[in-house]
Length: 203
Length: 203
Image (cartoon, rainbow over all chains, first blue to last red; front, side, top):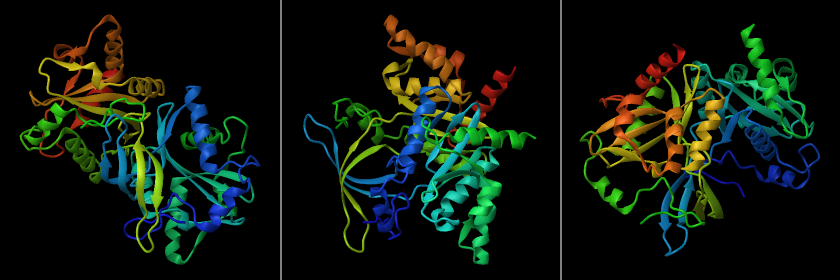
C-alpha cells in the first residue's frame, strides 16, 4: 500500500506495490538486504571508525495529536507525512560537506528520472553553489551494480526531460559515474568514489 | 506537560512547564517570537539569498501504526518520539560543513549544562574530528542576548561537570564566545559569528 501526502502525491521514500514484492526476495548482493539498509550500515561503519559522520535524515511528519499517558511515553495519535525539502543523507567527511540521495531500480539499461523529485534537484543545486559534494548512489538491483553519480551530471541530464527523455541510460552512468563495488564492510564503500571524485575535481 | 521517551527520559526538544509559560509572553527581541523560530527564519533568509543551505532536522519518530484511507493521505495512528543521535541543525556554507544546536535559558548569569545531552556532545566531537564547524547558539531570554559558542569550548567546559560545575558562567561565554546582535533580517545573523570564528581559526 503506497503512502500519500495530503496532496495525494505518492510518498517518495516508499516503494510501489511491485517494488515492495521485490523486497521479499534477496536483492542486495544476495544477502536479502535492501539498498537503504546497506547504506545505513555503511554509514555506521564510517561513524564507528571515525572516517565520516553521515546520517539519514528522519522522515518529516506533521504531528496533529499527541496523548500524554501518566507515567509513560507520549504517544502520537495523529500525524501525516510531509514532503522533505532536502535529500536523505548529509554529513561531514574530512572537511567536506557531503549530501546525497540513494535510489534503486529494477531496470537493466537505464535509471528512470521519476526517481528524482524537483525539490531534491533544487536542493542539490543550492548545495553545489556552496561547494558541497553532492551526488546520488544508484543501485541497479537486477544487475547488482552500484554507481556514484555526481549531482552536476544528474542535474544536466535531469533537465533533458523537457526534451522527452524519461531515463538516464546505463551507458552514460558507466561513462560519467564511478562504480562502487559492494564489499562486506562497509557494504557500499561509497567514500572510495567520493575520494576519486575529489581528486578529479582538484586536477 | 513534558514529553518522555519510552525509557522515561525527558524529551529534550520540549520545555518544562515553567519554560512553557514563558513562551506566552514576548521573549524574542520583543517580537513574541521563540528563539527556534527566529533561527528557522534566519536559515530561510540564508537559503533564499543563496548564502548558506542550513536545515533543521525533523524530530525522529518510531512509527508503529499507519492507516491508509482510500483516496486520502496516509494517517499515522501510533508513533513515539525517539532520541535524536545528532544536533538539530546542519548544512553547508561556502565549502564548510556547519553543525549546531540552539538552546535558550531564562537564567541571567550562566547557562545550565543540563541543556546539553551526552549524545549531542559525542556528535560534536565526531564532527570536529572531520573538520566540521560545530557550535551552539545560546539565547539568554531574560537578557535578550545571543552568543555563538564553539563546540571545542563547550566540550571542554561540559566535561567540568565531573568537578561539580552545573552551568557555564556568562562571563566565560562573553570571553570565549562571539555575541550575535539580533537584527530584522536575518533575525539571528549567526553567520557573521561563523565568519569571525573561521578567520580566528585560520590565523
